[in-house]
Length: 258
Image (tube, rainbow, N blue to C red; front, side, top):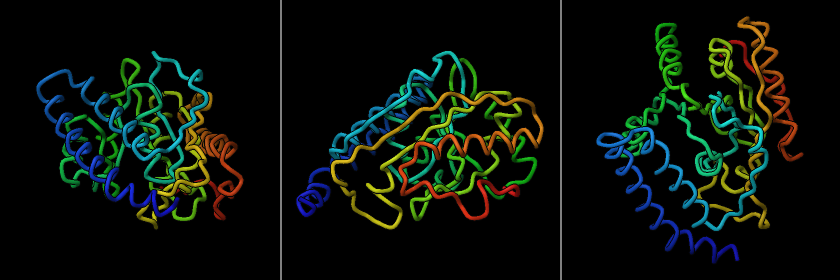
């Protein structure tokens, strides 16, 4: 079964998904440039993500959609187990949003240009206070009319399956704008494709699971309240992780210097 699935990835799924990725990127670039940018910035990526998971024959389970208000903008914070987190959130969350992503991803051929055309927010991690203000101004302009922003608070995918420390960016933004945070727990993505492996694994027919938790509302725009919110968000997301991925980082849940 394992050999057959790898051959399927190499000779059937892989070529189809490569062509689909190129077409999706081109459709996003052209659509956002010439037509309704709000539609073309979201739906091609949504269909691409759904197709990616379906073509790879991966089962999906989504819980908690009733915790979202379609008219409310959120700062959405999923844990980051692996690459398939992107396909899960993009394809199956069921609401329009923008991504916040690393500046380095802008350099990806076609995909980087598509993300730029879609109005996603790129983060320069080496930028100072001026860059941070520009980032918050850009986020403020995006978070209107029910459009949300997705930020991975760990900053990068885990190497060992354990949830990493949270960075402050998403929480500073939610605190400043007094917008609710929407925590999401993702399970299965690390088992399907960890950072250290090139082939997708179909692990015991175990589904990729996305659990949408009730929103967390910032109480007041202070550092102390922000830290309490970070801790609460970390605990909520960790509460639905599979036991093998539940161990917290030794030095705490977040780095106050990030």
